[in-house]
Length: 255
Length: 255
Image (cartoon, rainbow over all chains, first blue to last red; front, side, top):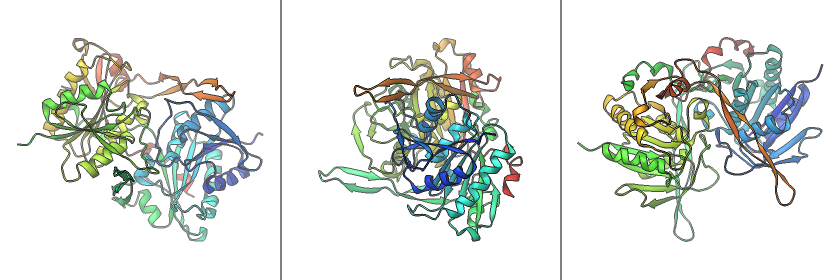
């Protein structure tokens, strides 16, 4: 039987160590094809490129793996992979990451890594985004690799419904100290922005985004709680943003 | 009593006719302050700018209204408004749009207009995104203005819970033919991409995103159905992407 075709992407760019670590895992399980941004695209969320053209450049980044650098966003990468490179082939799974830094809680909204995975899931492809809670370029991905292999195999073997999307975050711990995996809901929290205000050489004021994430929700079933306690968090995610709980309460707006 | 402070933004840019139409409505109800992108930012989704600085330029776009053009994305506009321009004032409502084109169904994910409104709602500010189902630069916004005034007034008067977010779409119809407003859920559907493949003058291949929206869900309670039948759709929306229905089914991934 053919090995499963696995699309690999990320938002830190095709040369990031995190995607290299993920490709190593995927090579042990299936046939990877890599389509990733040609430059860092963190914080791009679900952005797509509509007012300018896109290019794909074949790169020799991963030994024996067909790989492309894309000039667009992470979501563009998935759209181009699906429509141009793999238009006549079935993608068995899309994996995104390993992201350098957390995409737990609210961060899923800003994350190019997770938006790429979501874009695949919208099209009925099962998809998993992996993020390690370590921003460092030389982060230790070995624990993440161990669990990514388990999760990818289970996603391929257990055949969940089409378009299943997982947001997987891994605590910054040595493999032996990771306590296991937990299915969670997305925790609450928000960013407290702290713009750095500076002046350019001509006296013009500019602002540079900085901030800290204020966790607001450590209920036992949240991803934030799992990570705090040394577990990998797995949040099944989806793209229906309807606030069902408030539909009745807002009925008065109709009349 | 002070008039309510209403932050106005969009994704088509500060010079788009749609935001002008919205500012006209807001001036009748409260004190608008405009912070909108200095160029079109359609399709930017929830993108934020983290690797480069941002600027705000005061503009004289709307008579008697404090207005700024921002070099960033729609979400950047809201963050800068909140943290730099209005850090010591309470924003009573954020309105975004009027978008030139639909943000119904899945389009909410790609929409800078809706992401800007969502960014405000994450911070506990009530927010409404308005979109007219007409891409034309010179679209007729009069029907939208009529209903936007009603919705904005009701949001201010009825005081729904903090962070309430509405995705409002308006059919392309003369005011007299709009049948009313309906509270809906987000319909399903997907984009069928059709990249235009071309060659540059040096023989390099490039791809330009095009596509058609394939509506997949005309159930009576969806926004797509309301719009098809001549109603304005109002989808209460939120930012928790957890797929609660699938949490139990995916429990086997834990062990």
